[in-house]
Image 1: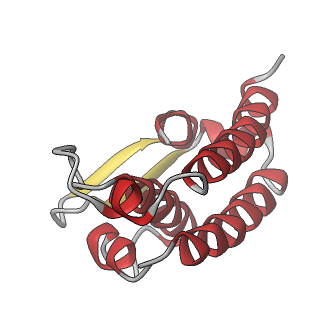
Image 2: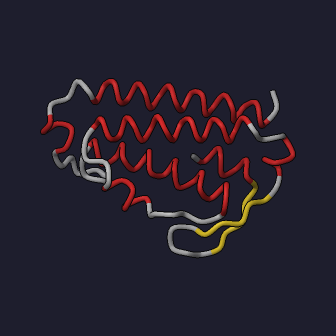
Length: 132
């Protein structure tokens, strides 16, 4: 299996896994979903919003090297599980479309982008994609 085939499989799995998390989260009551849990982004909803926002931000970096909005700003824009489900659906469609259009040579090349602190960073695309 090539790196590109592996990445395509990973992103198909990512879509399935995120869907599974959303389905499990749908069984929680409002307090369980939005209450502070002491985790990085406080609530279950907050942590899931971070996952969706990070996926959107990384795709923006891959496509143009810069983010339109911060991960925090994006994550805070989704206040319900329905909002988050919609964000994931759109993001998965966009990411899978992007991955589907790549050639093996594309993922081997270096990508220069700005990280969340604004520092310019350069890494092979395949490494960035497996990070996500």
